Image (cartoon, rainbow, N blue to C red; front, side, top):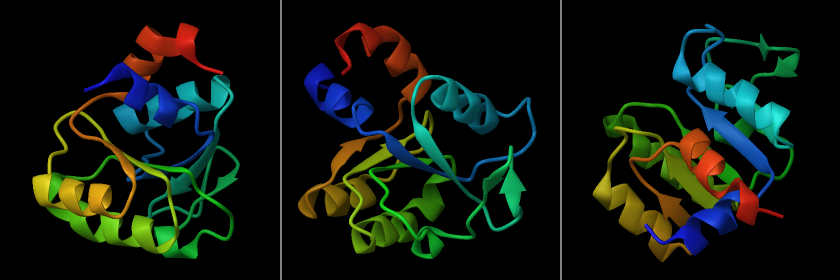
Length: 135
């Protein structure tokens, strides 16, 4: 993956985290906390919760009532396509599929719709590596 592509995504500040857990040992929660500490506006998305860390938790992307730049996906690969379709519908700018989340067809659809896409990578790890290049 091209670092300039990743930097463009990391410079987007409104991130919906799909599949966020409120369990502190889960990677989604740890990344949620990290992004909050590093200047991002995170938007929890999980139908199983109403609030996570004093933030309203939305049941799905379509329920979010404000602009979203990036969709960070913590769901199994077989659940990615409908998330991508919703991301396109709400005019997101980027998709980030975490480590192990792979759906090449959904990736193609997102790219064809003009979204920036990262697949099978960790946003926290990339932020650590590239933070010196961020706005």
